[in-house]
Length: 76
Image (cartoon, rainbow, N blue to C red; front, side, top):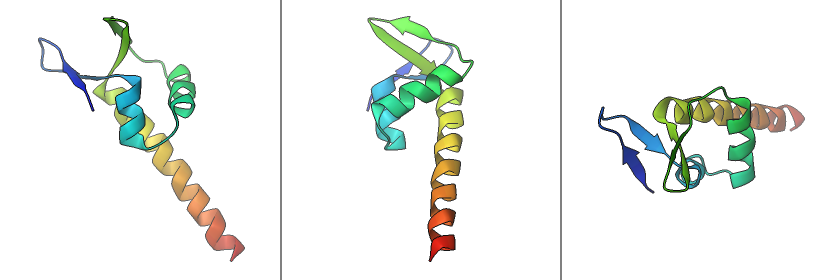
């Protein structure tokens, strides 16, 4: 896991780090990032995203997993 820092002490994350934190596929992360209106910083052939973007994606993935869990409970 690689976290990049800016001069203003902001954390920036690349796609692979976000994927490992969220434990989802790379394509899922890329699809969700396309939907977000977020700041993208390009650094050494990496696209870096601010920490707030990571938190927004965490929220989306968590809600999806909760819905899947509720659907399985309702079927039982």
